[in-house]
Amino acid sequence: MSSDDQKVLVSVRNLTKYFPITRGILIQRKIGAVQAVDDVSFDVYQGETLGLVGESGCGKTTVGRTILQLLKPTKGHVFFHDKDLTTLPPEEMRHVRREIQIIFQDPYASLNPRLTVGNIISEPLEVHRIGTNKERRERVQELLRLVGLNPYFVNRYPHEFSGGQRQRIGIARALSLHPEFIVCDEPISALDVSIQAQVANLLEKLQKEFGLTYLFIAHDLSMVRHISDRIAVMYLGKVVELAERDALYTNPLHPYTQALLSAIPIPDPVKERKRKRIVLTGDVPSPANPPKGCHFHTRCPIALEICRQIEPEWREISPKHWVACHAV
Image 1 (cartoon, rainbow, N blue to C red):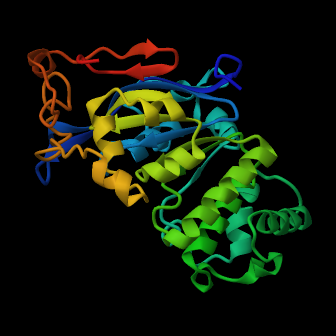
Image 2 (image 1 turned 30 degrees about the vertical axis):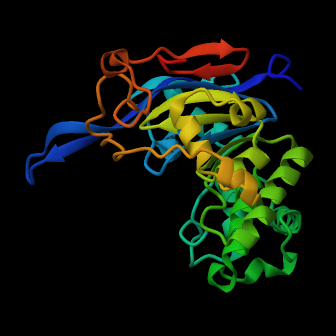
């Protein structure tokens, strides 16, 4: 299905999140800000998986948490079913939380070690006062079956499970309220390579079964290609390119995207030898003091003089292929 036929479920407009830098012990003064997310805009269509990729520290997780209002944005808007989540009063936001959930990156830190698996998965049902105790128990067992775990594990504790099993428990918890939209915050990066594909396949199966919509945050580009319909590339708090999966991998336009894709290993040694690697020089600038103009110009192999002065405009180069680059 093309995006023209799809309904926009989540619309992010000019999303910005700055974390203040303070100094002083008794009286704290603001001396600057970490510009974690800077003027980001994109849409997520109903039923699709939008991949969000970039280096560590580029602001991917902050985007996900700000969309869910776990972090309040500095400015900008997030629309879910045309409701602006940034302006909703707490009681209304509480109702919306039934429809938007998150799967956290670290399955070891995201589960309360003092609660049994049954209590962890049923906690959202209790918070939203859904069902009787018997109905909740049945729902927990159904969810464990859905994610490929034994329903009789309800009385076990998180430390009794492996990393992959814990992440399945996290997925079951996210599904407990029948959400429409799930932010998958690097859900496989903390797992063994052998388990990553199993969890990714489980997420795809659940998406087809329940019509879920995902924002899939990751830095493993090969896994993102496997699971995503469209992909957005972030660098230093900004989205620099957004395109459908195949268009991005066959025709990357932004020099940063080209460099990222050139780093993916190819299992064919002949093709690997012929391929030209793009090696970026220098370090990623500090988000507390990003460079003027295009944030990428300090490492860009084709930077122009205009790149050092003026921030590039976010524009649609070809149908559904957006990029922010003066050289394109």
